[in-house]
Length: 578
Image (tube, rainbow, N blue to C red):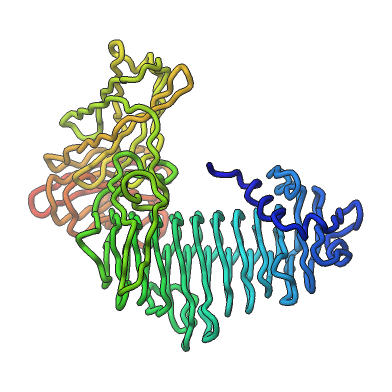
């Protein structure tokens, strides 16, 4: 059974008898500021901070301190947001190298600093909310420890920034919407005892640059990386990117980082690149989908990519060592939380035991079913399936769903989930059981909002049933393929008249060279929207009422004209009203 977050933290903190025998100083009851509480603490004491706002620059050195909000003693997560330490633009916590490695910072909102925490010691940073700093946590030479259960968001630079020699466990954090990388690790020259970086079970998303960036430097590195069961999505550059020559600006080069990197059971979705670089990468049981440019690039030399699912990347592999027989190029069909569904190809298709170049890389029994799933999360089936059948008419733009429930529970409603493209099933519409029922136990819904795309249009559907007894159950998945257009066509633009922007659709039964231009009423060319070969299917363009120089055009009637090869020409009028 999974423990709640506060139980895990309290178990960690209270597990040692030195804490139980140590003193507790309360802020502001015993000391008016956090800094005075820390200064007054003896080795192993707890500094317990009451809810409130504290505008301080705090230094910890020369002792072990347990610093936390009332979350520390109650497990009540509301105290995290109620206990705020504001740096007013300066570094909020400076942890010096003399600090004892048992030191804990937990249960605080840390905001508005240069660095939220800057540490040269191995400490435990747990259950904090760190935001609106330059870097949330800056790990310097000789530092590390444990960073878990934090929300690290909306910082100007990196979420977590690592320089020089660090040993670290980064786990169970949400690292999102930071102005540069979610995690940046500098691989400065180092040839002493092996440094270990464990990055496990984090959600890393919405960062402007890389989700995780490894920055190579000249000289030996002597590091090893375990990157396991992370969900990394919607980052602007690379999910896991590697650059060289101490360059922390992403170049998409896919640098030849020599350190061993064990990339196991991660999910990379909708990044520009999924993974780039690495000469000693073992990538197993990963999903990489929706990459705008490349799924995996330059994962080469002594690397191997095996037992993965790749889908809807512009390019799946570019110069990678791939065990092609174990890779599935199929729609991952994840749910709204990026968990596999019953129809996901990765369910029970991962690898549990793997040896590479004589070393046992993976030997796990931690999975549900006959084999590990591919991706971050294991599929855990619950509930009885609903019998579901699907039909679609021959016209583009609509799918008709029919289903029958075999559940003993009296259904009160259904959630229809839909995916266009097969990466993620999302809630589409809620349907009342009475309104959807055609006869007893049989239900019907018409999806007339299937937006046009490139042929073929594949729509994936699943239904969640809500019973009157509070039980829910899920259907199996079904797929509808909408037919593409069978003639050339130029439908009317919408809206028309328009003020700021209008959409123009054109339809191609097959590929062709397309020219679509806008003219004024005198026949003078205003703008060329398309002049290139285009595939068959449904295509939509927007016009914002500007000419080819970017200037706004005057109100009035305009003509847009479509030519496809020498076979088809059509024109329509549109009205711009400023």
